[in-house]
Image 1 (spheres, rainbow, N blue to C red):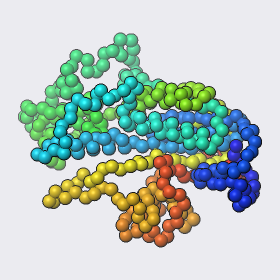
Image 2 (image 1 turned 180 degrees about the horizontal axis):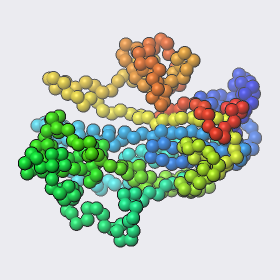
Image 3 (image 1 turned 120 degrees about the vertical axis):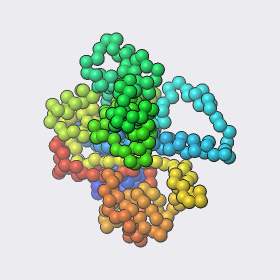
Image 4 (image 1 turned 90 degrees about the horizontal axis):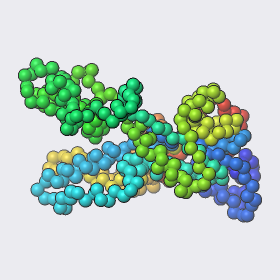
Length: 414
């Protein structure tokens, strides 16, 4: 269990009866046998597609709270890889023979898209890291169920769920042409061009092939837009995106079932219950506050410390950059593993301030920032930095936001 006896901790470390195993949050391991008396610790998890809320509490005290920012670049990276592979296929010399239908059979039961699988794995990693530092007794997970069709049409009911907007059309292109009346949405037929194209408002990489991301343009306006000579009207926009809602619908049961396979005493709750609990207790809206409500210990006193964490990319296997210069020259995309004794995302100390390395140059200049992207110095010499901790797969930063329900007189727990 966490302790507030800082003097005892210092004496244990000095006499080598304990060792430091983690700096953020600061955690020690005893080097001798001790009692195993623990309190009931409830872990609340506010699952999300962009941010995870974590709160471990007892009936009286908030032991650990965190907000974890997830990766959202998987789709873009996979699309870029597919684009590069397609470019290689178009060359006269091919690095391997073409492969077509060799991926469908490898999708086992329970297969998830890589972007969803990565986020589910991060949820499980966050729970595992809490179990490494606290004797958790039970886990309560909030899952959300979104009716995307009702979000589009609040009056939908009955058999209308089986009759989508593309019912009766062969494909999305035919539906978009019919929806737009076979008229160019840019010039409204003024160009007299009878050839019609279906254009992506946002790139296919970003917005996909959903009908809301497609509009009808004549060939003249279509070519002019891509040449930079035509501007689309401001009234044309993609509309509401349901990517986060779709993600939660896919991952919620996978995450819950994985937890039950690994841990015991796992429970489920829903978003409307969390919202009612937070509003009735006059608590502010934050992910870790929602997690505290999920843990069911609303009377627990917080020490006003929240650990903000960020999941980062572990490996970059792209050898060359996408830009091709004159003569077919492409610059290497992979930076050296170590520059002046530092790696990317190492935790460093600069003028008594803890920050992270977000950029490096071969001459020893570094870009250091906080996890929220706040820039501290973009051209700092490596001689002014001190290494605190090497990079991890999840970066951690301690903050003290002043919120309702926190007790500023209580020191941070170790």
